[in-house]
Amino acid sequence: MLTFIGLGLYDKTDVSEKGLAMIRSADYVFLEGYTSRLMGTNITELEAFYKKPVRLLLRADVEQHPDELLDCAARGNTVFLCAGDPMVSTTHADLRIRAAERGIPTAIIHGSSIVSAVCGLSGLQNYRFGKSCSVPFPQGNWAPSSPLDVILENRTNRLHTLVYLDIQDDRYMTVNEGICLLEAMAQKKQVAIPFYVGVARAGSETSLVRAGTAETLRSADFGPPLHILIVPGELHDMEREYLARFAGLC
Ligand SMILES: C[S@@+](CC[C@H](N)C(=O)[O-])C[C@H]1O[C@@H](n2cnc3c(N)ncnc32)[C@H](O)[C@@H]1O
Image (tube, rainbow, N blue to C red):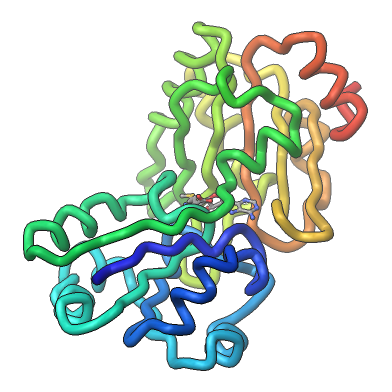
């Protein structure tokens, strides 16, 4: 049996009771740490909390060579853990399909997700978001402009855009870096993004939300990761008031 379990947004206590019970009774525990991270804990603390060893998986272990994981799931109760919700803005649907192809039963225990957390933190309504996009760290001369295309299309349709910020090993893109990269793309295309909303450490006691122009936010200190950006589309009155009250929008 393979159970996908969402660990929530920040630390070891964000998992549901149902998820925790399933982890503690599992034969094999795998943790995926490349699509998102629980920044308020580490693997040693998780192993002590779960009272069992946790095997950390790289992207290649999941997407290219999942056989070891699937062999465990064929033999015994196996849990596959990841930060947030395991099926939101991740590629784990593929793993569930592969398990089903091998006749391995699967289940999902959902976790709180950054996708819903940003709505409460920013006041932007979930049904007014369009397609989301990701900003990767530039590699040499390669820096895609596709995130800006998504933002512009959403703005044409008066929709907000959620912009995921890259994670690479121990390097986490900040709101400031994300804005600089998007502004460079906008400058090349000669378009303007009127303002941004930056969110840091959703789910922690030190979560931070700030709304403002690129100029204001570029130099703001959002503190430790994880960070995420929203590019708002058209604002309803209540969304504007919420951002003014809770995110410092002028
Ligand atoms: C690709 S998404 C994966 C979403 C995850 N499956 C979920 O449901 O929350 C990961 C990105 O979301 C953002 N993110 C995730 N958790 C966050 C948090 N607690 N605070 C701020 N940003 C977060 C970061 O930009 C990170 O690179």
